[in-house]
Length: 376
Ligand code: GMT
Image 1 (cartoon, protein in one colour):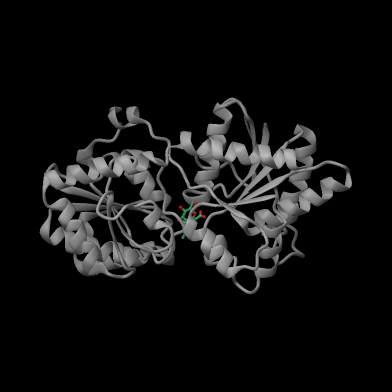
Image 2: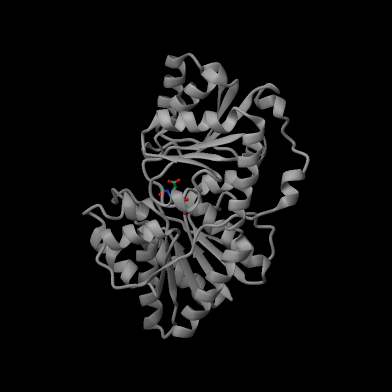
């Protein structure tokens, strides 16, 4: 199949899911065309069957806001015609589903059909999409998609609760490439760069937005390090990073926390991690937690949104109510305080992660693409 994928090209979240999906489809022989404003972070163009088409938005001084949707829908029309694309898959409803629908309509005028699948990722529904200023357009473009998927049951329920939809939402969970060999590979990064041998390594990875409850990450670590020698790895960039740095300073633990910024070495860090913290206010899925589990890292998280569908209570880690720093800290210490318990959780975390192996998830998308193509 020739598949066009529209996504955000950024670190983490929906962009990573879209990129990894495209790469895996390409390995299976499908021709994949990424269409977005920058080359996606994890995309290597040296892979066979992978194309990248950049959307350029010329800057014109008349415009207070440059019209990205217009440029995207134009680019989609041009690329679909040039490469004879069979199906369009947009990740993150805003504004991709809207631009996709416009492209579909323009192509229909020329007798070309372009089936469209929209994957809802989370904040496009829970935080941004249901804002009154966007809601009508988001509802319209979801309803006009040929197929709609969501990354968890929780997000599916939220979408039905928040929008007036007449569409079936298919749940296709996020996935991970389970590669046993990757765990055994000799790491280019030495553990000693991160922590002393007797120290445990606690990790948090996110875009440091308010929804991630970053101060709770620091507070949970503060409690852990009082009982267990440990270091905190903070990976990512975002508005709450400065607040976290200040809090570490106020609590007198700055020497025990490393802030990496956005990193392409996430696997190297996860390989040495003992525990992952994800105390988010809301999370449709929690891909970062799954990535940690695939590296044998147990997870201490909140129980919001789709996280309980990924992190299994008492198996791959523990879940607490949002903001319950005390409970999260106690759970973390329970896991870390004996090597035997820690190893048991590490193994279990990996076993749970295996359920989300891309090999099991990819056929679900392929089936949907086939259905969409045969609909038209
Ligand atoms: O909030 C983020 O981490 C980024 C955001 C995105 O769309 O890029 O992530 C959302 O999609 C991810 C991939 O499906 C999910 O794993 C995240 O849970 C979800 N974030 C939220 O719901 C807050």
